[in-house]
Length: 307
Image (cartoon, rainbow, N blue to C red; front, side):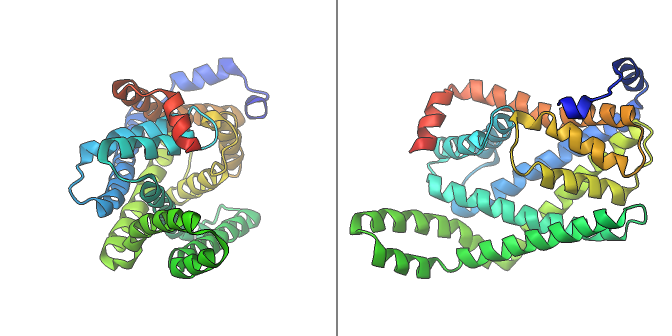
């Protein structure tokens, strides 16, 4: 946070915030709501593949709690909470839910590659930034191929386990792998897979709209293609958790990315603070409300994580 707010002139920041264009701010909020709905629906679509009679209302609480806790607690506590609450509400096994989370990451990776590709044509992007985009697209692609190969080589993995492990461990491992493979078999259904990737791509575009219209609210001249670049690079930078809610890291990276477009530092700091609040606070609030409603303690989630 120190690096992000270094040389921040808070009096000037308050003045900038007071001059925000409310119309564009509300537009960015609308785009955030639409992208959040699609994020939820995409995960529900994956979970529904495991249990066809599951309703939207059964997945909203686990989804919001998971994202909410991820934004205030370190490591992957939010993901564990999502697994725990979905199992509590639907009876779906943890191993199968974990597979839906992995599938969600794979689909989002494909969607991000699709929306990032046009950014290499951005005339305002420095050569090193363009090379960085190409590098990350290549890295994500390799990662996705490796994961995809692992998913469909489960029989070979089981054969190797049977040769090296005891019967008791093999039975437990086989059951877990079979539960996970049931979720991963989603990738064999081409129509459903294409639909999920389309939802993911649209979600990324709507989220880029949040960046774009919020920039308009601050009178920042950010082109649509540039907003996609800033969003994509920021998301990649935040993939590895560094602090609860990415506090400090989020602001620092946003300011650095906007500096590529010659945005004045005090304006970019102000933008980063509002953007962080917009992307994180609604999930924290909704997650905490659902968490209190469900009446589950963090101790129960921690015990679930250990098991």
